[in-house]
Length: 296
Image 1 (cartoon, helix red, strand yellow):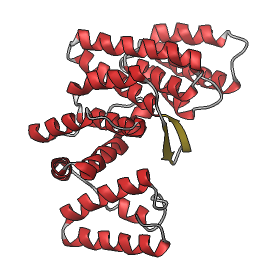
Image 2 (cartoon, rainbow, N blue to C red):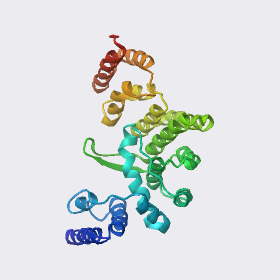
Image 3 (tube, rainbow, N blue to C red):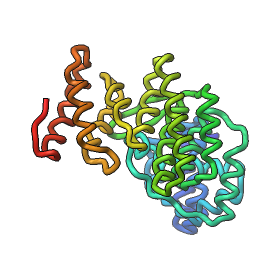
Image 4 (cartoon, rainbow, N blue to C red):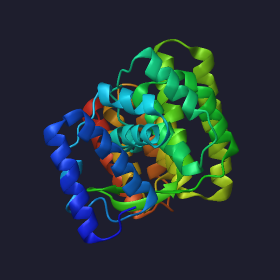
């Protein structure tokens, strides 16, 4: 592992040189190294010079298939990068553009995902499942969620700065997202499994008062068209949750009239946090425009 500033600078220069000489090999090395920096220590990957290398790496299906075929740290690196490609979109309840892999590579990924791993790595693989639309791993996701026992996972984003939450929160978001995709394919039994898992998780999160877990589960519900758990959970924190709430009126899977009724009911509460009230007022104004009427 590289710990000194000089070592990081030299390694960054090496990867850049390899990218210029052989883009595919340089990309694969950069993906694996980036994962080690983020998950195994060895410096600050978000700072110069590695941030410059990171911005130069653009893996595609061919590089991911190469890494998955190699297995081990290379496959883990592919999973972590795939997670990073959609983590913020899942965090804020946005669609995920799927990445297509060969049948062989996808089968190898599915096989490896099922192997025992730490709670944080289960989170990274869950994000990769969403990016790959690996529906065959729904049963694995449901099992991870049911076991609970997550670990802190740290995020860094320009709008939300640095924050952490329970790793299982992302697993629940992916369950909701897959449920939405399965519903579109009329796979009702599997969609129901997703909804039931979110309901059980929501009950546990309520008793534990884990805000991060609640945020993940309620966002999963929104993917399935259920908005009241998220709106009721709004508080002073989790600005990404407020961003999801503000987008609800424009989501195609959210019915405007029931949403308006829910917002009006919540705004009549006297114990709302000011941040929650501000967000609900913004949702109400947007709904008034959509519905062509003002409501209290």
